[in-house]
Amino acid sequence: MEYQTKDELLSKAKEAEGKSFKELDKYNRLGNINAKGALGQVIEESFFEYTVNSEARPDFENLGVELKVTPFKRNKNQSLSAKERLVLNIINYIEEVNTTFDTSSFWKKNRNLLLMFYEWLPNVNRQDFYIHKSILFQYPEEDLEVIKQDWKTIVEKIRNGKAHELSEGDTNYLGACTKGSNKSSLRSQPFSEIKAMQRAYSLKQSYMTSLVRKYVNQEEMISFAKAEELKTKTLEEILTERFAPYIGLTDLEIANRIGIEYKNKSKAFVTNLISALLGIKGTKLDQIAEFAKANIQFKTVRLEPNGKPKESMSFKNIDFQEWTSESWKDSYIRNLFLETKFLFVVFEYKETKEQNPNRQLFFKGIKIWNMPYSTIEKEIKQIWEELNKLITEGLQINYVKKGKKIVETNNLPKSNFNGIAHIRPKGKDGNDKVILPNGQAITKQCFWLNNGYITEIINEI
DNA sequence: GCATGATCATGC
DNA sequence: GCATGATCATGC
Image 1 (cartoon, rainbow, N blue to C red):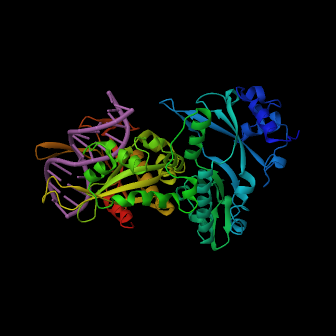
Image 2: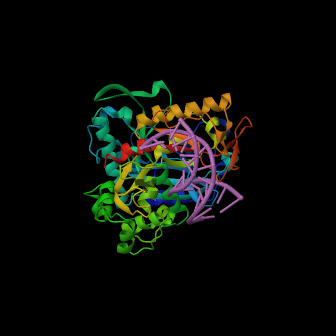
Image 3: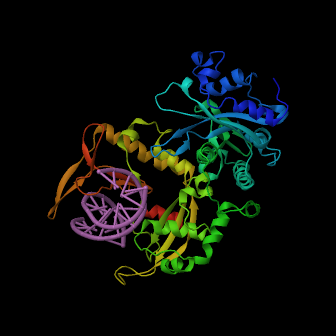
C-alpha cells in the first residue's frame, strides 16, 4: 500500500515497536534465507508489503523516504552503541563527480530516513530480536553541514584520482565504506587508471551510536559548533581556532585563564582543558557531540626541546586471543586506525630535564589526524602479520640477567621493525602477565606508535 | 642519545 | 582490580 503522508508512514512504523522479527515475518523469510539484509527484507515485504528493490530512488518514493533497519547493542557498562555503520547507496565514482551535494546520489536517496532500531543480542536467534524504536530522521542542521563537508571531501578525493585511497577516517560523520570484499568489486574511477574498491556512502558507526543514544535512550550530548559557523568553516578549522589563543602559554597559565583546576599529573587535566577551551566546561569528552559522532579521540603529546617526544604513544594492551583469531580485515588494529580520528594536543618543553627538573610545559597547538590508508595497509598490516606469525610459531621469551635484575625479553617487533609501530611491555610489575594462545606466559604487551613517527605527524602542523 | 623493558599513577 | 596514560631506568 502507498502511504500518503510521512505521519501515516511513521505511525505504521511505530506499530512495529516492541515486536520481534518472528512476529513480523509473515512469509517465513527468516527461516529460509540467511542473507545479511534479511531483517530489512522482512520489514519491507511482510510489514510494509512492498517489493524489495535496489534502485537509486528512495524506498517510499512518493514521500522521498528511505527505510533502514539497523541494530544497536548494549555494552558491558550498560551504555548503548550502534552495532555497525549504516550503509547507504553505492558510490558511482564516474557519475558522482558531476554532481553537487544537492544533486548527489547520497542526497537524492537518503535525505529522509525512516530508521527502525532493533537490539542485537549475542547468542540469540535473530528472529527473537525486537524493534525498539522507529523514527523519521532528518539531519539536524549542524550535522548536515558536517555531512556536506564530508561529501565534498569524498568527491574531491575522487576528482583527484584517489578513489582507491578513500578511507573512513578521512571524514567526520559521512563515510565511504567498502562494499563487497573480493576483486570483482573493484570499480573504475574517472581520473585514474587504478581500479578502486567499490564503496558506499555510510553514516559512521560513531554517528549511528549518537543517534541510538539520543533516540533509543533519550541521552543528550553537548556540541561546541553551531550550524551557522559550520557553513563557513570545517570542524577542523573551528577546533584549530578555539585552541589558537592559548598557543605559547604554559599549562598552568591556561588553567588559570580558563578557570580550571591545575593538576600536573592528572589525566583529567587535558580533558578538562579541552572541554573548557571549547566553551563547554565540565563536559566529559565522550559527551561532546562532535567528538562522539566523528569518533575523535584525543592524545596528549609532549615534545622535548629537540621537537621529538621522548616517549612513544601507547594504545590499549594487546589481546593476543583476539589478535590471532581475527582476519586482517576484521582486525581490531586495522579498524581502530581506519575509523578513528585523533586530536593531538601538543605541548612542548623548552628546557631539557637536565637543565631544569621542574621545567614547564608550553602549549604548542593541535593536530587532527587519521592514519593514511596506505600506512594501515602496509606497515600496520606488516606488524599484524608478524605478530600472528610469531604467535603461531611460539614466541621466544627469555629471561636474562642485567646487572642485579632479571629481565624478560622477546622477539616481538621492535621500533626498528618498519619505523611506524612496535610492540612493548606494559604491565603493573613483573608479575602482570597474560597467557598466549599456546599457553606461554608473557608480561602484558602494548601496541605503540614510534615517537619518530609521531614527530613526523606533528611536524606537519 | 636512543631503544627496550619496567613500573608508577590515576580513574573507573 | 584493572586498563590505560605516563614516565622511569638501564645498557649499548
